[in-house]
Amino acid sequence: MEQKMFCFQCEQTAGGTGCTGGAGVCGKSSTVANLQDELTGALIGLARACQSGHPTAYTHRIVLEGLFTTITNVNFNEETMHTMIDKVNAEKAAVLSSEEGASINSADSSAVRPLPIKRQPTSK
Ligand code: SF4
Image (cartoon, rainbow, N blue to C red; front, side, top):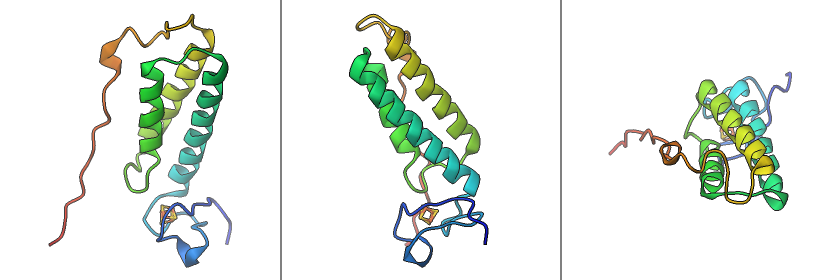
């Protein structure tokens, strides 16, 4: 079988070794799995930028949002993944280019909003 993804993020992982096909046991598509990997890489890049740049409270919020977006079964929406990757990369550029405490987004408090959480129905 062609390996389209590799995910061993949770206890459901195929064969106890990793989901590798077109979709995981949980239903996560290989496209979403790969976008989550890309988002994780972008977050690592942002974290590294913070070591030499000027992170703000908005930067911290973006890191939290990005990490939350990769949690198992929280969000399998490809468009949301692309949007989050773009936000992380934009913040990385802002952190590296801004004066201390002057991230381009930090003055826009409306940009700091929690992600909506879609709750799964509970079975009783
Ligand atoms: S999160 Fe989904 S794709 Fe990843 S290991 Fe668990 S079941 Fe497999």
